[in-house]
Amino acid sequence: MAKVGVLGAGSWGTALSVLLHENGHHVTIWSIDEDEVRMLDEKREHESKLPGVKLSEDMVITGNMEETVRDKDFLVLAVPSPFTRATARKMRPYVAEGQIIVDVAKGIEESTLMTLSRQIEEEIPQADVAVLSGPSHAEEVGRKLPTTCVIGAKTKKTAEYLQSMFISPVFRVYTSPDILGIELGGSLKNVIALAAGIADGLGYGDNTKAALITRGIAEIARLGVKMGGKIESFTGLTGIGDLIVTCASAHSRNRKAGYLIGQGKSMQEAMDEVKMVVEGVYSAKAAAKLAEKYGVSMPIVEEVNKVLFEGKSPSQAVDDLMQRESRSENLALEWDE
Image (cartoon, rainbow, N blue to C red; front, side):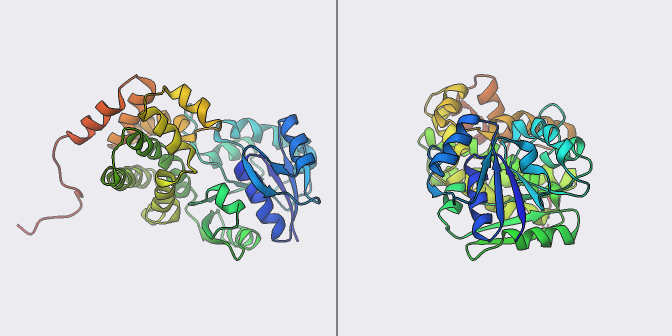
């Protein structure tokens, strides 16, 4: 049995805490929100974000970061991506040399263009940083529906250790050395999911959704490979797998926000209605900057940015995507003649 500290008590942090506890581990959950700590401690359930998923009485709920971090076999960092760096900075004094931190959020920092694992490494250089990603809505993991994810780590030893900690009859875990590819797939797919939601809000159909998913993964893979990620990650669970579930599911906050924007709401109105952090909004500008930096064409990402931040109408954005210059689907394929 391992001692685990989970930092972040939203839907994903809570679902993973329950999973780890049911795997036989001793779990301590931290939240910066005193009301959230009190609610979880008293109700043993996250009533607003993960209703119906019960927390065992022996799971510790606290607002004390030192208590959560010190002397734990590994830590799970589950705060929303905009708060990753600040949380890591607060954790640093309590993290031991070589202590494992598994980041489970998805995003890219706009100001530095760093992935979340790089931010954590910068703030906590003594940590052994890994990532967990894949098509995994908290609502379904909390209900014990079959789910598969990937652990990315610098060493096989760390990856296989974490695999053994998380894997269960309903939560299958694979391993990979491609941390960068995993993180890029997980963060960039949120931008494409906004586009898919916008298309749904406009009343478009399955053909449109399939086109956005397929051309979206092409954009993600082009940039990811150029940055050093591996193509296998973008064709696997943390690429196309995560993109499909985020574009199609009613649980997806990014798709829901896009849907509301497609129906005429502003970005802020959509975010307010979703009532959770919409990671794609925070990653959209970073994705556009990375595309420019690496000289990669990402027309869907470009149009999403124009809708979110420049007031472009969603229907015009779709029209402009459809009427781009004709081209071959895959430039790597050559004609015989």
